[in-house]
Image (cartoon, rainbow, N blue to C red; front, side):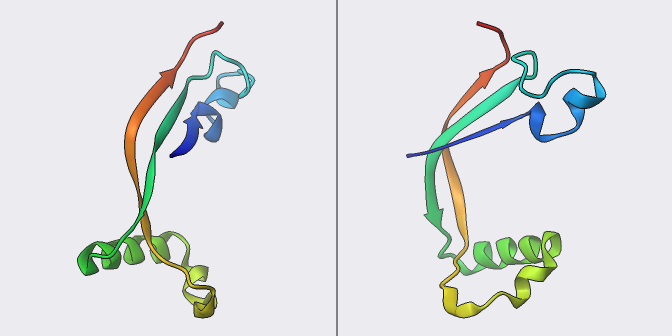
Amino acid sequence: MIWDRYGEAQTDYCVQQGLDPQSPLCAHIILSGSVLEVNDTAEAEFAKKWLFWRHPEMKDWPSDHDWFFAKFNITKVWRRGYMG
């Protein structure tokens, strides 16, 4: 089971609104699920295309580190946008 948390604090939204990014007034979502290695060639090529478009420096990372492409299979989403 993997948990990951995202929120408005990961963007400039809260700062632009004059809010503290750690404030409960800035909404958060918590995602849970599992990470699955991508074995499908078409899906792996799609992932590779977008990863290297977003992070071109990664094309030159050493291949002997056993990198692989994966996807996050989300099973639950919890949106926390309240205080208390």
